[in-house]
Length: 258
Length: 194
Image 1 (cartoon, chains in turn cyan, blue):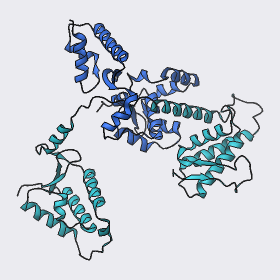
Image 2 (image 1 turned 180 degrees about the vertical axis):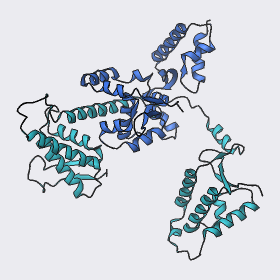
Image 3 (image 1 turned 120 degrees about the vertical axis):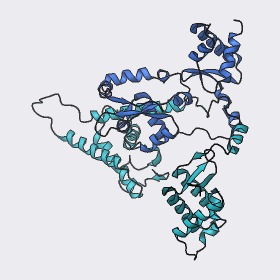
Image 4 (image 1 turned 90 degrees about the vertical axis):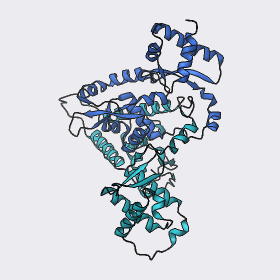
């Protein structure tokens, strides 16, 4: 949901009750939450919900959400149809000879609302507990010096996943000078060229990190092509990517020593 | 042994994780477990009386020294780490998993009324919940449960230490749907804790 503040001007209906909404949509965690809000706002007895009133207001909210072009999650529509279904069932006259004891059409919804409400309250009470690293702290298990020392240790190499590569790629893109992004690059690049370039560099130097692979030419297209070439090479098992620790520098090695 | 209290205090201090009574018992085999428990209670009481910067908390099945909650503002200045931020959506999802575990995604969604894919993923990443197994029904949905880290983060001794768990169970039984769920939950394939 969007963070926008929504104010109903009351144009859609002359109803006094619906005239002055000022709600923040992100406070609604789905249709059940919206229903609970309506029940609270109208001071309704949860065990005896006036379905017609609630349905009307609920649909009014959906209209507002739509009018603002916000994404309307499917769950809201499912709930709307449930409400209308219940409403229509309640309009039907009860069967003259009830075969079984007829359950109130609202019962299932009330059960759901009550359970949802219970867990909302529990979540609040959980959140108000003294939380580790927020309210209470333990003795730090690892000294900062130890962390620094271990990253310098080149011995322990971890194989990195594609996700970490993508992260590294994102980091470089975000570090790029914004102005450079605007420049139009007329240099024609092909993936094959870049792949050959990388393999050539790797035969000279036994390992390289991503920035060294770029060789100081940090335009957007080159970064992307280098990245794609790297993914291709890893897929073909021609190179291997390692890092010394989590979030450490990723280094590229040739897969086979030539 | 005169210095048992000092030894136990030192053990808890030196341990990186909440120290279990069983572990203390292995280190100090000559002392009865009830004796160790007595010393632990005694220690906790001492820290309470002293009203110093730290206290002894029984958490996640063990004992751990923690800083007092009212001192957090100063500790935060010392540590540059970002505090745990759990969104309301994730907190509600976590509450449902904690109280109704073992539970599958669709059951959580029927309570929350919305898709819980994103909060579940976040909770898994934070290691507050874990995959317990797969339910033996069509589609083999993943079953979720809370982790030991959940107890540590939320300052809980064990799951029974969760606030109002008993009241909630009673409420559920009145409404007669917990029992149905227990019947369903019998067919569970266990997956070891990773």
